[in-house]
Amino acid sequence: MDLRYSESEEAFRAELRSWLADVLPTLPEKPSQLDWPARRTYDTTWQRMLHDAGYAGIDWPVEGGGRGASPVEQLIYLEELERAHAPYVGVNFVGLLHAGPTVIVEGTPEQRARFLPPILRGEEVWCQGFSEPGAGSDLASLRTRAVRDGDEYVVSGQKIWTSHAEVADFCELLVRTGPEDSRHRGITWLILPMDRPGIDFRPLRTIAGSTEFGELFLDAVRVPVANRVGDENDGWRVTMTTLSFERGTAFVGEVLQSMEFLRALRELARTTGAWGDAAVRRATGRLGAELDALWALARRNVSQAARTGVPGIGGSVYKLALSEIRQRIAELGMELGGSAAFVWDTLPEFAGAAGHGAPGCGGSEDGASTGQSVSNTEIVSTWVHSFSRTIAAGTSQIQRNIIAERILGLPKG
Ligand SMILES: Cc1cc2nc3c(=O)[nH]c(=O)nc-3n(C[C@H](O)[C@H](O)[C@H](O)COP(=O)(O)OP(=O)(O)OC[C@H]3O[C@@H](n4cnc5c(N)ncnc54)[C@H](O)[C@@H]3O)c2cc1C
Image (cartoon, rainbow, N blue to C red; front, side):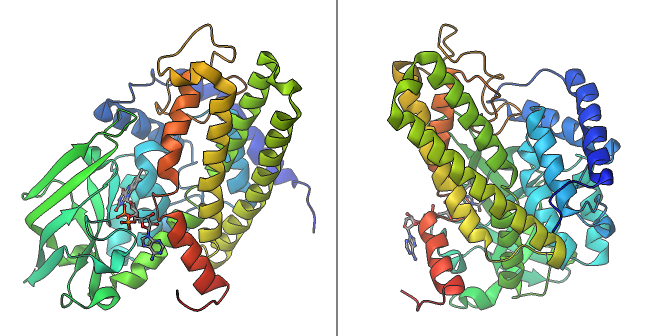
C-alpha cells in the first residue's frame, strides 16, 4: 500500500486549488437563508461553474456525464472545497447525490440522456418524495397510489418532509402500484415533474425559521410511464440503491465540515480560557479522534462505491455515527458559547466571532463550515439543526436495526 499521493493526484489538487482561488471571489453575495428562489439561483450558479470547469459529478461515472474521478481524487476534491470554504451542494443535494446516481444505475439510456445532463449543469433541481404522514421509518407502508391509464400513471396521495420541493423541477417519488397490503412488493419509483396540474406544496416552518421542507399533496397527477425507473412494483429494490447513495456517500463531505467546526471550537476555547479545563481538552480530543475514524470510514465507502458502482450497507454505520457525533460537537459548542449561545443574532463582541457568513447561506444547512473562528449564530444554528440529523435519511434507531439484522446477522426484533 502506498499512502503518498501520486504526481497526477498532486497535480489535480494544485489545479483545483488554483481554480477555487480564482473563482470563489467572483461568486455573488450569499442570499438570505429564508429566500429559497435566491438560494436556488446561488446554488445552481455554483453548480454551473463547477460544470464548466469540468468538476461537476466528480464521483459520477464518465458514461453518466460525470468526471469519473478516482476515489483519491474525490477525497481531494472534498478536502479542497472545504479548505477553500466553497459553497455546499445546497438545493442540488438530491439530484447530484442520490437521484442522479440512482438514474445512472437503474435508469434506461433515454432517462440517463434526458435527466442527468441538466442536473450536472445546475439547470434542474430535484427533491425526494418518499416519506408520508403514516410512512416514515416504515416506508414500505406508503399509500400514495398510482393507477396506470394508457401511457401515464395517475397519482394521488400525500408526501411530507419533502426538502427543497419549493424550488424543485423533479421529484424522486415512491408510489403504490400493487394491492394496498403489498408492502415492499407493490412499490414503484417514478420521476415526477413538479409543474404538473394537481400538485400542491405547502411549506412547513422549522424552529430554525426556515421552510426547508413541507407537505406535498398530489391529486390525480399524470406522470408518463416513461418516467418509471425500474419495473412496476420493483421500486423497493430501486429505493435500496437510492438509500445506499443517500446514507453511504451523500454526507461524506460533512465529516470535513465537522472537523473544521471542531477546530473553530478549539480556537474559541483558547480565546475564552476554557482550554485550561482538562475536561474540555479531553472532550475535544475524543471528538477529533472519532472524526478521524469516521473519515477513514468515509474513504472506505467512497472506494467501495467506485469499485462496485453502489455504496454498500456499511452506509448505515457511517450515517449513524456521523449524525450522532454532530450532535455531540454541537453540544460542546453550546457549552463553550455560554450565554452567547442563547442569542440567535450575531454578537460582534462574542469571543469567537467573525465566522463565515450567516448559517445555511451557501454553507452547509447548519452553517457548520466555519473556518478557524466561529460566531455565536453558527454555534446555535449548528445545535438547532443537529437534532434533525438523527432523523433525516432514516432515524438512528432504524440504522441500528439495519446494522443488527443485515450486518451482524442478529434475529429480527
Ligand atoms: C431535516 C429533514 C429532512 C427530511 N427530508 C426528507 C425528504 O426530502 N424527503 C422525504 O421523503 N423525507 C424526508 N425526511 C423525512 C425522514 O426520512 C423521516 O422523518 C424519517 O424517516 C422518520 O420518519 P418519521 O418522521 O415518520 O418518524 P417515525 O417513523 O414515526 O418514527 C418515530 C420514532 O419511532 C422510532 N421507530 C420507528 N420505527 C422503529 C422501529 N422499527 N424500531 C425502533 N424504533 C423505531 C423512530 O426511530 C423515531 O424515533 C426528512 C426529515 C428531516 C428531519
